Length: 137
Image 1 (cartoon, one colour):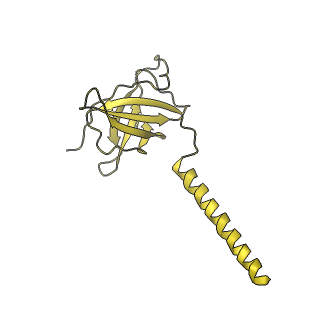
Image 2 (cartoon, one colour):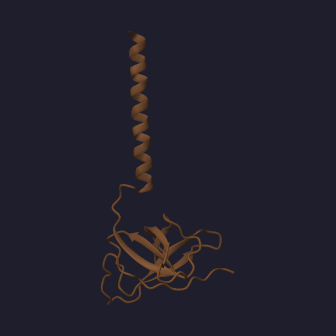
Image 3 (cartoon, rainbow, N blue to C red):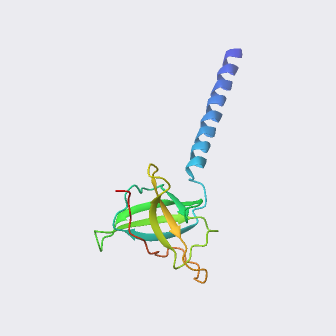
């Protein structure tokens, strides 16, 4: 009888550990977090950008992530980048987007740069203008 109890306890431990592992993986991946506001932009070259790439505000804090990239069906020379940012970030209608990197050896990220204080807040799903990509070569 004691062996069955030990087996049941080990089974319960394995189930709890597996559930905890799944919870931690989903939490760290951001699968349960609120997506915030989504915006779009187009780049002629989107080197180093992929779904999950960090979005920063004016070279500063991380404010979101890239959701998807796809080739523009109307202009195959452009890549549409869709990204989400926290709802408390003041993305304005005249903000512009660049592909940047913090150092020459770091990965590229997407950065939103504000333009004027007087501009209105960009609505969810708005198209933001982009600046051409400049690399270190």
